[in-house]
Length: 208
Image (cartoon, rainbow, N blue to C red; front, side, top):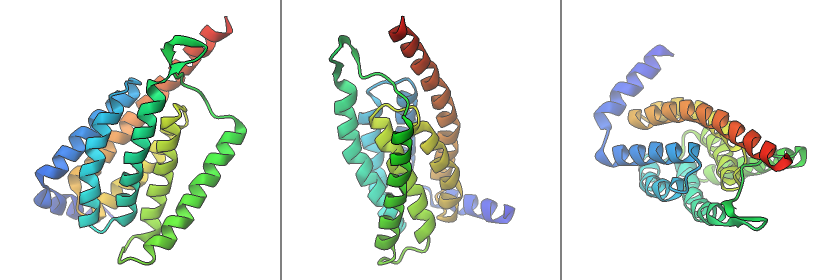
């Protein structure tokens, strides 16, 4: 197992390109803005996903290529949602909220539907990581949807995605990208804590 990680990292460093570096830098910048609940999460994120659509195609990570296309679409949608004003308080943007039990069930079912669909599609390709790639992609798709809705649970989805993505990208010899997901993991934990604080602050304010 240790040899797998070491060899994958060594090969990844040798194969690293400036395009991958650009995608990683903008990806990390996007997550930073997401933690701060800044709308700049979307323009910076769009640059990163466009870069990774190409990278994933090149390395036969077709589900991840599709997920980045989905990220692009959801970034446009999220940009719109985040820029809207609260109709009950025009001075404030859409607030951070937490899923209800029903919304959590829907999120889980949504992830399962994404996974089955992606597995079926990947089975028609030459992907060598069908189920694994489908898992990281399906959880990330749900996470992106929840982030666009400004739901606290989006960070839980990202934590799961990041944990699973590190070994996947090491396997594909994309060391810098694997490092990016390790950074994402740390940032996702920070984001979860910060968004919970924000939710409690807004909730307490509204109940007064």
